[in-house]
Length: 474
Image 1: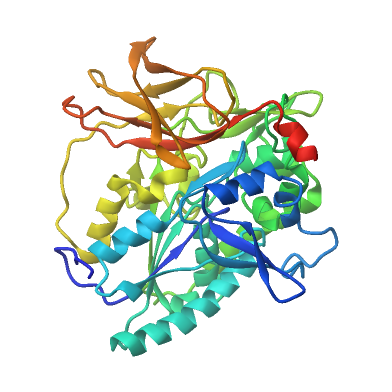
Image 2: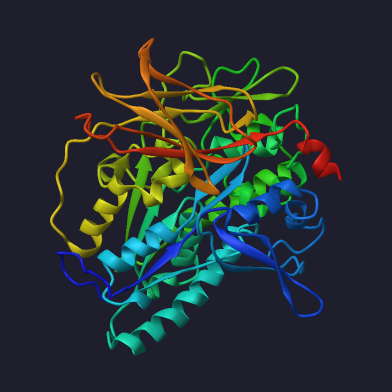
């Protein structure tokens, strides 16, 4: 049975909208069966990455296909439960933890919290329209089940899911069914990582070789993650250029991506003045985050963490993927920015962080806030390493902190290595031992009894064997 919060009982339906990579995808076969292509569980990850050609490449949208309906038999079947990784592009913690806590702490009934799976390859326009249809059906059904005839839906959207939800609300009349949108690490103004993926490609390290370029280049959703702000320093130009001005991508891609944001902005500007739905964004603020790009004379791009694409410029930071300024709506003025919830979490796992859920509980039920003095951390670690080679994990933390770094195998969390972090050159450092090939969760936290109170951080890495390239080619 749910154990409701100490706050006011909630009548609305809660709908969790995942980010890119966050929905399970399957292919409908000619015999009527279904074969999972992108799924949940370590075994599925091994299939997706270990048999790269037959699985992940199968998600590429064919050239010339209708981007809103590719006709390739791919359908979304549920939300990712544990972890999904496309190395050197994005990682995401599954949504079981968030949904479970919402059901146990906030919901009055188990069926008051549901997820919205969608094909994250497609345009957010397409997914937003699908979400609007989903909300209408689910809210009507919830009103019948609960007897709450005025109930609507509260959307809790992670990462790109916030763009899907906002298109639904602003452009597909979703506000008729949604009372509130809560976004967690949503790139309202885009993310430099998307620019890097489209301009430089997505690949494992050079000693492995396989590339994800064809897949990422074919996805309308990735184009809609391009930065809308001036973010590229080009040779001979003093001011930063926009992605279109910098001429680093096919013009069609940029126009499609930026056009999504332009159309959304027009809808927001023309919204009805008597609307009562509201928006609350969560944003990261302490993690090193690619923000801009430096274009070399040969056309190559190098991502930079500063706001002006120089090595010594102002470091804005964010959640490791989405810059801090990008995680709030573009129309928000300085006065409104104070309403954003700032957390020191990494993008992949913001939606399951204790600090985020504490705020969610207060927002959704007016529960008494739990005041705690907590140190805030920043994490720097590789996303891909060579199996059998030691590597370093770094952290930034308040003076006097006691920290440990842990690396746990995703398929077997009991197989964990923990090292005490030591202060060196104003950063904490831990040398982690060589790992076998596989998928790992990195965590930084305070050891038990240390007297240090911090919000733990988690992220993911892949340890790659040199002979994986041979396996993929086979």
